[in-house]
Image 1 (tube, rainbow, N blue to C red):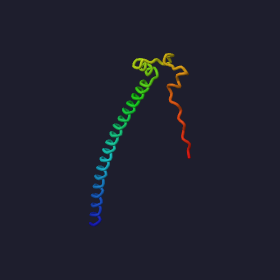
Image 2 (image 1 turned 90 degrees about the vertical axis):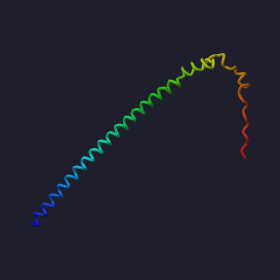
Image 3 (image 1 turned 135 degrees about the vertical axis):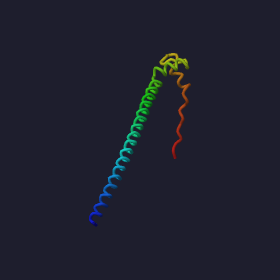
Length: 107
């Protein structure tokens, strides 16, 4: 009789353990699916940011291109690159540049 009761308690404990393990497995799978969805969303965000960065770098390269800068200088400032009219004769350089400063002797 005591042995039958002990077996019955062991069966009940095993049944409860199976239920607890099934619930734990379901929760773990649900959490893993949620984490996987979050990782996918983060990867999409990273891909979007990288695409934005590539577009910005291309725009910077376009804006900094020498041809564009020369065109804007001609258009807005009226200066032409390499034109001889803009170049100063060597004798006029002294008048345009500041005189060299003497450095104070260190004591």
